[in-house]
Length: 255
Image (cartoon, rainbow, N blue to C red; front, side):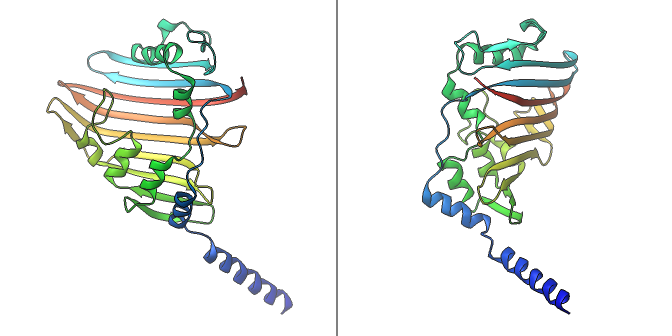
């Protein structure tokens, strides 16, 4: 009987603890009231970038690419990228253009802005709004969905301006699930996908789009963007195309 009473007491204590755990929306509001944690302005590490590309296009044929390089965001322009057993010309043209811009033009603050998975004031405001719905949560994490407006925010704004902005028609047909740890509200994973085929400006049709990102903890205890999986399937000007790009950031070392 004593063992039985002990088990009952333990179960009641655990149940009470679960019931008293702070829910996601309350944690978000507490963080809004306290103010967001300041995001680092620099990256105190060099890191490995690994890329795996699988592309199929009726126009350009098939492309498969695997490559890796080491990046030092604090090095002088032109000296940031250390290629590993490859030449610049080995990288696909669009990828090489982005790499060369990062190596020569961007600033350490710009690198830090994309590197850290830190929630800023604008993100907190969206998370506290009705645009975010809690799907399920435990004491240790919460999974939430986003409205189209919130998805537009997390994809880089709703203005529709800029060379790389996503068309509003696409954004409206995207769905999203984000997983946050509790109680620290650190983003663990994000999954955004196209819910149905969508035509864009009559010359292109997107059959499928799927974006996944993952954040891990850096040696300094802060969350950083550690990987992504991107896949697209569509048709433009009568030509079909499919592409999948996986990227990982790993092997962080003090610089």
